[in-house]
Length: 324
Length: 294
Image (cartoon, rainbow over the protein chains, first blue to last red):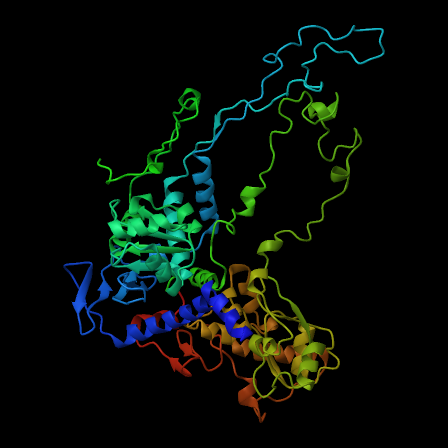
């Protein structure tokens, strides 16, 4: 009794079953590879093949194919029902989803994302800027006390601070472009390798009820925090409504994908279109011949002297979608 | 396949906890940056007060205050001049060879060369240390009583006498470093799948030694070698056993071709360890290359 209760608890947290699932999925991947004939498709990247069970994608042509390793495989899933429904197998480019896991580059990216927007507003007035302190507090000689010229000297209690912070100071810098691209590739590799990457055909769910989405995440062991990434920034209505009501679930367009968000969320859910966009962009970046130019920061202190107004657009309630 | 390093790292990553914001770290080299500007803005820059230390006007190294320094008064003895380029012959004494034979570490029914000595796992040659073969030394020349066909790289007259007195034969033979490496560990060499190299001729300064019949050089005239054997027997006063009527005459007179490095194997052949077979070249250009000296 106690054991089954414990197992349930563990299963809810997605630990035990995650490991089981990982073994299952990897072995079935191999089985699929051997048994099903791979059909080649030239017109479309991912060509659905009509079978008895429904449309099945069995191959995907990759740009910039490589000889040094084999393409990685991932299931194409569906979000139409709570239970997982496999629509086919996808080839993933090994340069994006099986690179060397440079954890230091992940750290550099996260550090950069934290620091480039950080402005230190701390400020300490100097002894000249503090009030008073013009008069000599006591005579130079004859009292047996230390010589003193001002009560605002740094040695005094309630005196000024020597070399204090003179904010606002910006910590803006740009990480080299190649390191940013590699960071994204490494983050995607980590997600794929640790079985935290899910690829779905689209974000069409039957209801806007948040319980449906959270139950789906529970059944499929997606964890507590999930990042949904689509190609476009205009998302389907139902999933937007459902995600908005669940803490820890977030929607993001493909152009906003970043290392920090990927590492912050337990599971990354990509649509097929987002996968195409991300993989295409990163491969383009990998094979570009353009020379990287150094970023020159032209910001001046005047540009951030005052605190910016907080954009409260997101906190308002709307009756109808915004028009741009 | 992708690089083994990447594959290994990804395999390891599968078993590790999820990569997240709480468990990523930069490389240690970037965390501990050496402080270089500590003395900036200080008056004396950490060099103390006035004097030689502050101004950096120390005496040159080796200067002894005016008296003739050690480096000039002591004469130079260049024992180790050109050490890096000299040919090295690690010693093996007659006593040690006799011991190997007594303990049946080497088989005297076959010719003894670098391979049979190194196969005992007691002696090794290292090409990176400029080892060009064995120097057979005189220690144990009185107790040496084996009748063997020896092939070494460096000998003295007394060693030759000790071997020939017992009815054996001895040859001095030059091998170039590539051949020494192959002879030192033939199995490792064959597993590389390379063709057996043809041995180079000795360099200019070693040519005289290896073509001298008194050293039993492998390039010497065989008739002159026979003469030298007689002369040496007369010099040391022992009776030279008759080679022509010897029962193991074929063993004692077994010699390699100057280009050959293994008995029974010719240069250019490939020993395939996986399939247990020997591959021989048929192309005429190859055959011409491996049969001739250029």
